[in-house]
Figure 1 (cartoon, one colour):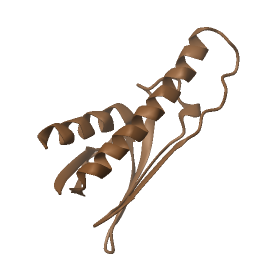
Figure 2 (cartoon, one colour):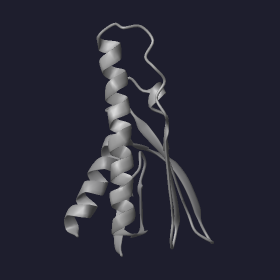
Figure 3 (cartoon, one colour):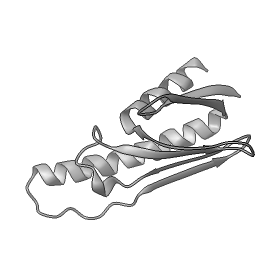
Figure 4 (tube, helix red, strand yellow):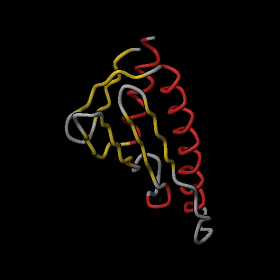
Length: 114
């Protein structure tokens, strides 16, 4: 297990994270990005109200509990999207927002190191 650092809007959080869990989170974010792009494309075409997309709800339980949530229906593009992160263990609980694009970069950097 290696250390993953996620950069938040203000500050960052670092914790031990499993490689397979990081790959799963990366897959979930990929699906979220497709939903966000579909919404943006629909809006750009002037097609009226887009079809509601399913929110991303990812959770991981190991040494820590990590939850990542994003509702793609409230953001005009992937670049504007934010996710709600919760990181907790038996002594600490942190809940914060992070920019989706920054989380993607952090995950990519983590997986490239391994």
